[in-house]
Length: 272
Image (tube, rainbow, N blue to C red; front, side):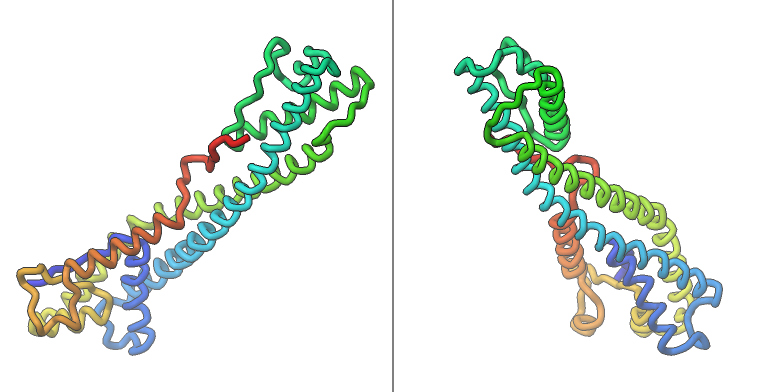
């Protein structure tokens, strides 16, 4: 005997709600295999879940785009910040600048080490240190020196990075919010699908097993044959367990490729 396979992905949940709704919209409510109260709940859940599902897909795309843009600005801004400090160190080695000038930028005056900038937080910290430090140095010493890159160029690329960084954080916040709304709704959807399928099967209980499954399948119920029980008469109507697992695995693989980890900040390994 084939058994019912409840949906395990959001795409499958959406199909389980949309198929019976579309069927009723097409054939009318007179002969639908569930109560009008159940249909009203179906309408409400489908509307909400479909809205959040589509929003989640859009926010994932936006977040991925923002992430790629951020990566480009991060690399450029980090180069300018690090190169600026390298030039300061070279001027100190030549004797053109005093060694204690490094303290303006939050660096140890007794060391020539450069800061390690591995991620966005590091760059945000040291970029602000360099720009504010240069403003403070100029205010105290009144001495302007001309080096490449100039502090204006550093600030230009750092500001582009900050803008991209803030846009990415905003897109991630929106994505996390939509994901939380789907998580809240998912349990209610799962419980309702069980109720909907039970009511649908009960409506067709007087038919033969084969007819009952065929009619119930038209309202979105998924039946799965175990490999040892598969018969040729259901090859085109009922999915096998192996076939269904392949579809689920493909959906999960596609999801993993487009989603970013909501709990881990995008980071890039340090390159000078």
